[in-house]
Image (cartoon, rainbow, N blue to C red; front, side):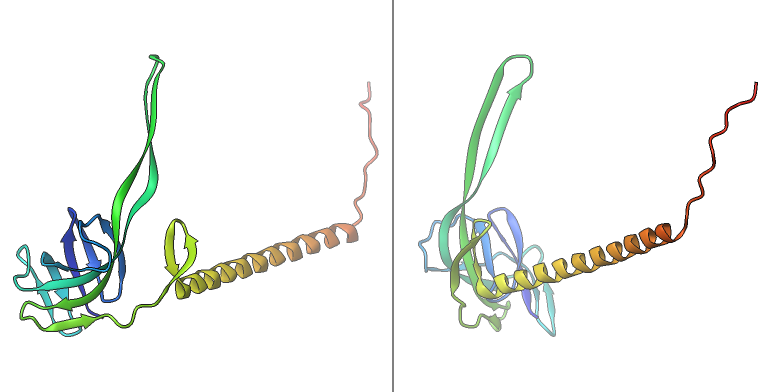
Length: 181
């Protein structure tokens, strides 16, 4: 599987073809193709290229899916014993991009994205997610619940055995004795 490490917005991202990323806001419109020329690392199935610091001639193409704002981050400032409090929120502007092509330093196409899967209208944690991601999450959830049910059943069986053993054994009560004076 081929991938690249690119730098944008002061951060580095490991990207592969047809991957959807959330990066710092780009000033281009939705649907436009963007090139990232700061490629730090390229890995093909056969070769690996390391930049010093960048790989000259290598680039990664992506299309902007949406320009949105990220989740709200609450900022709370307080000075103790001064009755001074300040609370406000911040929403960082971000761009959702989809990596379409990865090119090597010679201009050779390393990886290309296939047809785009439609994003569902179902929203999970403030982001749109593909249907296959949702079904995968549901499978994991059902597997976890099955494991929990099995462990609960084992515990109930052990408790039942213990109670059965207690009922079988007759507890001999000793008479209360008082101290002799």
